Image (cartoon, rainbow, N blue to C red; front, side):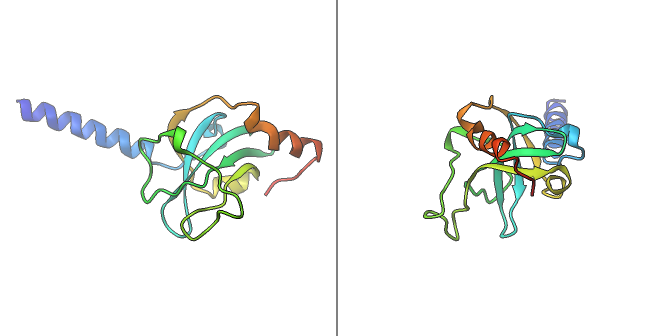
Length: 138
């Protein structure tokens, strides 16, 4: 009987993990302050944070960290943004603010990581500059 209970818990965990690792399916799944992982063309995953959403798109912070597998236990204190001088084959360029149209973002296959951190004013600096410049979306 004990083995049956253990198997039930393992099956439940497997189902929950499978649900977590599914890419978002609708714009309503994009939530401000939450982290998502996106597959890289070179393999592995990058992590992004949603800073804002508006009527046309999503504003993200794209981190430089590269994960060989979908990060399931993300330590957000280790996330960083690498500049042009730090970019290499192993390190991706980070972006403090990147405005993406909803249509484009939905092709990114972003997987919610179920981790939240309030968006700080510092993180919105690029967004505020974009607003002042009346910028567009990628």
